[in-house]
Length: 360
Image (cartoon, rainbow, N blue to C red; front, side, top):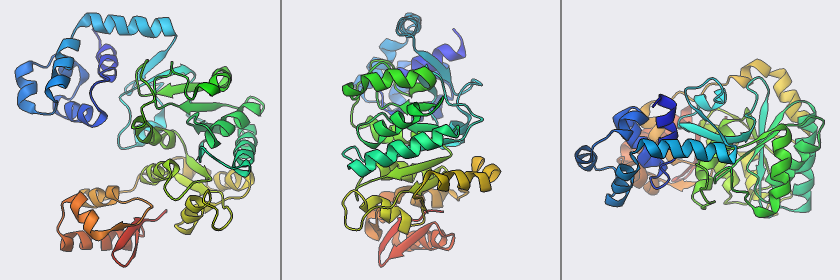
């Protein structure tokens, strides 16, 4: 067995959650070592519940790996690991890149600009039109469109990119790449594969569980140079992706909407917090033409560890000091000291005892 075989096996441990996998990898340092881990050591380590440990030990068979490769062959699914040259370079720059990617079709071209276009599932006609229009015009200029194949903005963004001459678009799934979700996007799924690709960190057969999607969002932003949000409510999954984009040092663009329109609350708030206001595809094209080199290789924020803990607990929604203290396990005095340091760096803003991230 080779290194890639063990990583495939590790990525297919579907009964063990992402955070526990990360802890196992931090302790054992390689998928091969996890594959060879003994029951006594796993028990002493205490990362896994009893049923999870039993599953892992039962799964430690070379025949399992052989079967997994056969499954990928039968379903025409490709797999690449974080160590291979075809692994998307931009993902290597994020804090928690997937150990491997399952995909159909192609992977994004590292030499082209990629833009994530996301927004409300239950979007308005305006949202549908703008998603399609922005994606089509940008794809005509060789910008790769990244989204999540969801209903609403995602679907219209993919469709717009496909309508462009040789437009390329890539869908990042919150399920296995062999699962078409939502099912009404079957035709769109097939059209994406003609010039682009479908990819996921989840193994084949993984169903679209709701908890997969927030985790998936970091890959959408991670694959992109920037993220464009078209329509988002006050509490929207799109804001989670914008949050990920900010942490990853990506550019964030927002399309303004009508005041007091529920579908515009999220996008308008992002603009207030510093997102680039755009009202035409030319705004984004000009942004990258003017700052082309700087923007492609934008570095991740450089923060001390204690600042990272506090910063990662914040989002675009305001959060009370007491809740932050509870989440970070820091005393109020120390927490305020760190928050003030982040505020001086123009990363955080406050209203009374409520704090939130601001966009750089």
